[in-house]
Image (cartoon, rainbow, N blue to C red; front, side):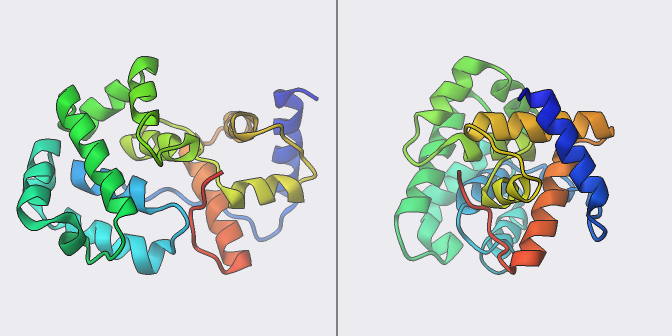
Length: 209
């Protein structure tokens, strides 16, 4: 079955779910420190209680709005202390991504959006250990590129619609195409499915594919 056929089935299923509602994504972070922190921390963690407060803390630091400014704060304060974080893995990813963006001259969200539209640049980000397809798309999502960032909630929603997919990319393409058919922003449909499934499951986690 083609992606378009699966997308149309998904649209029909969405229309049949009585308590499904469209949710607009929160305003984009105009702040590189917040984008990097959000994108790296989100996988597998409760967004409302764990990720959001830490992203807000970074948002409250205007000097971290640029990549180089965020890097200076990290070097001065230490990321574990800044985020009140114990283990080393996710802070390591934050630091590696921040240094990559700094080397690439990506200082603002607007520059990040343009940078992510180049496949060679995406490959550089993908090469950072711990950054996978979901995180790459979440960076796109946070920078304003319309796309779904597929996690387990999305996959479970497709299963509820009796749609099988071969992997991450097909799942993303089906959801994105469904958004286009429905005349919705792709980020809006992503957020709407995620919100619906997180409420029904009681799990407010962005889980990687």
